[in-house]
Length: 434
Ligand code: AMP
Ligand code: ZN
Image (cartoon, rainbow, N blue to C red; front, side, top):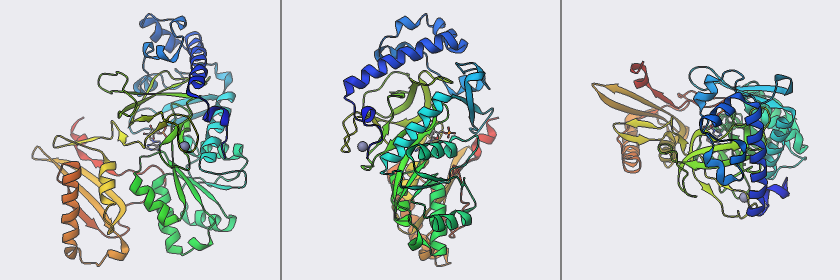
């Protein structure tokens, strides 16, 4: 079932017309209502009349996370506070949070794109949604909540954590759809296995996002939970979850491009890149009122596909996020994305999907240790007997990523589980930077 056929399956030319018109309206809106964007545009010597079509987008200024932090809390709002009906914030890792403000219309857009997201995974009003993303300033919980309600489904607003209760309600209420981070899905899967209740569950799909996860991790979750696991993407600065979603083909995420116009740029030269090339994802919101953003640099790395999908949707798709430019580790001069390590580890049947990367600097040389749990069924208690596995993983990382990592096999359940966004990297070198 398709939620909004008129936009998701529109011809590309027709979509371009919609985008042109909406871009013009957005540029007019921010020029007249946002002192921040007006100043930025004046600096570049442009006025709204210079922006007629999407092709003129390149004339517009970029917006960065630093701009949002500098404008904390409300400097990027383009409507009076009296029009803002909701505030969210993204904590990030350092400094002040990034704040987003929504008008009533923005909330309605958000719940529409989230309803599309769930319909994309085959859900309908007959589904029961267990929303186990955190509720609060984080956009995950409330974003999924109103989207599922808009679809007409029944919503269990349980929020993240309290795993035992999650499983109890999942069993008693017959939840059919689960929304949470992939790392929490894995944690829940493990607990479900432990309680031996999988056969009592009605769960059939999951909508997982808010952090990078690999195809290997998807297969792991699908196998353990016996569901179809869909990748969903979004960020607070643009709206929250609902920016892009997978359909049943699970071949790239459809971007709701009638609301969020995507570009891929080279993060160094800032020049647009060709379809299919991997670079930094940039979004311009073309319908938002409260806090529109022009050419927002997400730091997320991916590529775009413009071919019509086998599902019939014509909307542009983005590949799975391979990482964030600021998550990339440079270890002994080699670029390493945590997702590459995750993929390699999960090629080994004996390694569990629970791992942590430790990077440090000793005697001016980077050290790289990867702790990974052994699956309970492969764990003998005698780590020395696992020497061969360790060597095989090290050799594979060396050949795929091009770097030597010290693999340390650890006991099942010794690595901390997460209920929200997982933290899988400890880079102690940062300590010396300050
Ligand atoms: P926040 O606004 O704090 O929820 O964080 C948004 C960021 O989370 C994005 O910019 C991405 O880096 C990451 N993110 C969200 N969804 C996904 C996803 N499906 N895959 C990979 N990363 C994601
Ligand atoms: Zn599709």
